[in-house]
Image 1 (tube, rainbow, N blue to C red):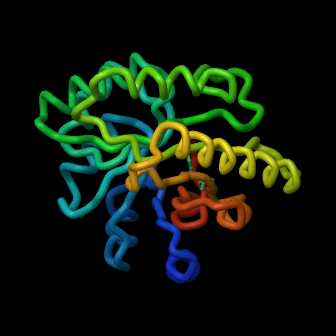
Image 2: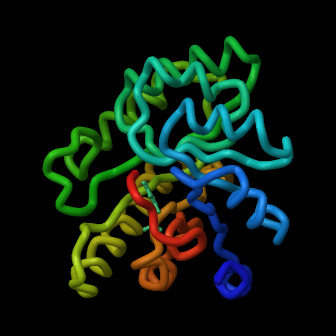
Length: 219
Ligand SMILES: *Cc1c(COP(=O)(O)O)cnc(C)c1O
């Protein structure tokens, strides 16, 4: 399955984040041996353990909710954090990135689906967030785009509508806050069940787990 997916994504020039959360080292090594170098995890300590055990040319992406007190575990090596959704988190990433003398790339996660339980950025408050970023000093953070998850539904029309709205938000943010920054170009959207729609709607980066590694027991 991996080979078919990666060929399809290469053709479309879309980046693959192979989501290896809950999966053992051996399973990651198998996909690594096929050439994959970008892996995604959603627990800081699990990611740090896998980082230690696996080849150092892997780029580790953090996806999912990140607790502030866990950033220290991943700051020495994490390549991209997909899930920044509040200023306090941004402040702590800045602090830990500086302590490690690194620049950490980040995506801002914006709610597009019906995730009513989750806090974070939405269509009404994202402006304040980017305004704050622009007005303050984050020398160790590079914002390179946004991330979003569609609702967990089988309604393909709804999923498409949500991805469309994320793409529109990206265009808006890009022109308003990053007009001269050619690094601000990533839209992380699409998972095993909806990545084809996401790519049609402008995704540059998909996060695929179960389709590559098989179903998870938890996580
Ligand atoms: C688990 C997870 C994925 C991958 O999900 P699959 O359905 O297994 O492809 C993608 N994004 C996030 C944020 C996740 O937590």
